[in-house]
Length: 569
Image 1 (cartoon, rainbow, N blue to C red):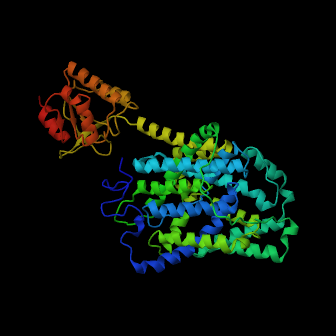
Image 2 (spheres, rainbow, N blue to C red; image 1 turned 135 degrees about the horizontal axis):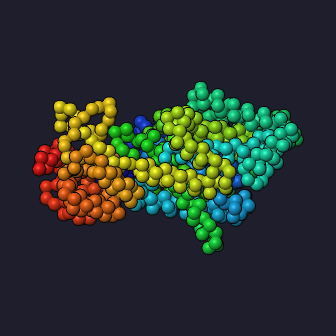
């Protein structure tokens, strides 16, 4: 597997000529400042409504969302690597941890807030460890279909959670399907004012994004909704508003939780950490700081992880990399994390001097923002492409989404992760031995195909295996080789294993291979290996004694070389 974290000489402190902190300011020029300030202003206009809406999605007061944004942005600016990445409250992970925390404490209670802060600390420490120990490969454990299934399920959770707000109905409790059924029975009681506000904000955001992604449609929608609510006196018509927003600055404190709650948060923190790693890796790869340099995914894990730690210490919740906000910074000409710091300064100014302006914003308007988020995270194009090109993996999307929708959300995410790993294991076990033939008139050996007639040497079998050789497929490998020996039209005197695809050999597979070589030697069949290019597999051959068992001059750089040397004996 390729090193997903970037060049191998990078460590925690950065590359050879990089800075240990504020990496995005390395080689910074003063003329970049105006670009960063404009990008920061645009980022703040996007982030302010989004952070409030995401906080509300998780059952938190609006200022908690701002605190998460401040913590995520400040920490990533100091410890992260990517020049554009925006970290803060994120609607992808919020429904997951909110569902898990709701099993331990009532949403919005002091205990709920303490548990959320403790979860942020745990997630942050896991991400910090993943970055320091260079575990960026963990982000590759989730396949694209399973990731899309996550997003579909989370999108449904967001939609269902916001429908009561948009419709002006009481929020039902219980499992997802039960909540949908209750809402369906009460559709006739919909408040038209909240419905118009929610759909209106949704329409403004969608239209703004279609015209130009840099237009702060969410901020415009919230402002118009707030003005409309005041001028038309909509509070008297059943339209609820955000209410007073606390302007007290956060205080640093360690969350105090019981041992029982700590144990309950462990599994949830692991799930959230994996999702954050996947999204952070995808974001930093999609918006690289330098197109000519590999992204430092591990360093970005450190930046986001420290952000979650700081968020937990100031009483907020886990943070995540945001692909849409990162895209805004990149598209508006941002050159460094100074854009994020400029957005932080604007948010602080808003809390200090303009918090009263937020109190009259209708909750339905925030619901409209979240409806747009739910629609935006769907990957319809990819879903259609997977359906057309790989129906089996399309079923992975459906299975993952169904698990997240029907089961408690953290259990559904766990099942999705398991499905991704099982799919990878299943793909490995499908590997089978292929018989190779020489392409006529050449020295090239290629898998046998009716479309490419080839030649075989009498008494010689050339077999290839195009997967790592492990306990998952070793016994099938042995069976296929023995079947090839038995079905040979002439008694085989030589078998050549074409090993280009064997990048690894584990202990179980090594024992199977040793037994197979002994059996061939006992029956008078010479055994050779060609094109074993993987250094790890070569080391395994020495470590497990396979080279010694093969004997001298039984490893070759090409199949033709092996056949020429041994096939005429």
